[in-house]
Image (cartoon, rainbow, N blue to C red; front, top):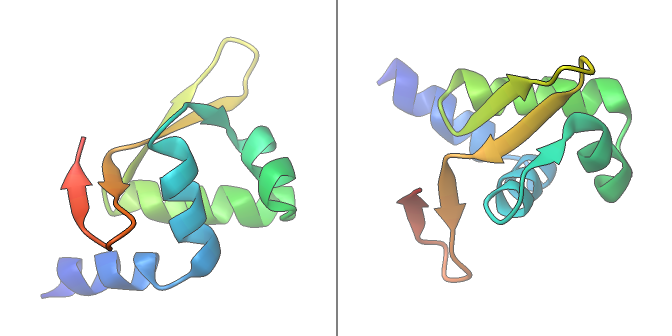
Length: 84
């Protein structure tokens, strides 16, 4: 139950849902997400880390020390969640 609670908690935020939606179609850096969502960089790092911790995102460190983010799930317009 603990893991399920963590997943639902991670999804209980409009910006974290937007991050998943954006990253299910394209790989973004954390900086790009921060600018797109008009969020502070450190908050974007926190949100992406939370989503990665529960297995919904994957972050990869690039050669230039930036982090690329891709979603491991897709949320359809009707709310259906699919693993990708």
